[in-house]
Length: 115
Image (cartoon, rainbow, N blue to C red; front, side, top):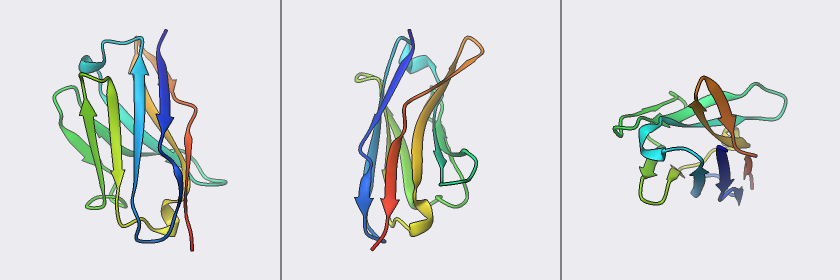
């Protein structure tokens, strides 16, 4: 059974930082591309960043240079380091992977950037 569990969200002031973590189980983690998505209130869920099994990364233009995705294959975790946060980064952040043609999502973690 594939399971993804996010942690690390919270309330932060503009310009601050947060570190999100996603713990994966039920898959041979090192073989999978892992993604972070986010969904602002009333909007669609969009891809923020992903990291391939080989460690190649890609980012949405709105977060490039501010967010960093990484993976720890020993701990079966994918990390999203978020710096220079802006109010428009406020959203529920979800971890995602695809296994045997099926999408798997975590429960999400709320990130709020506000004074």
